[in-house]
Image 1 (cartoon, rainbow, N blue to C red):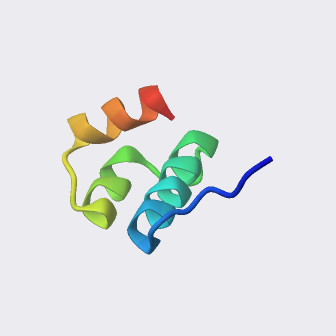
Image 2: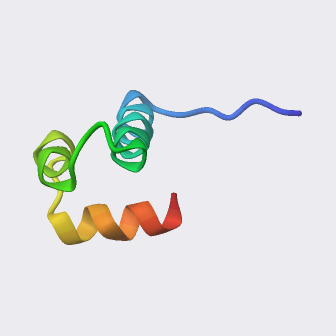
Length: 48
């Protein structure tokens, strides 16, 4: 298995999306953390 290189921004995005997926964070709270809209968060969650 190879390495996956991620920037700090990408890593933070994955961590926040994981928290939303686990129910530890709401979409409304995640949006300002990632500087995105609610709709963009839902789109990312579909792909995540």
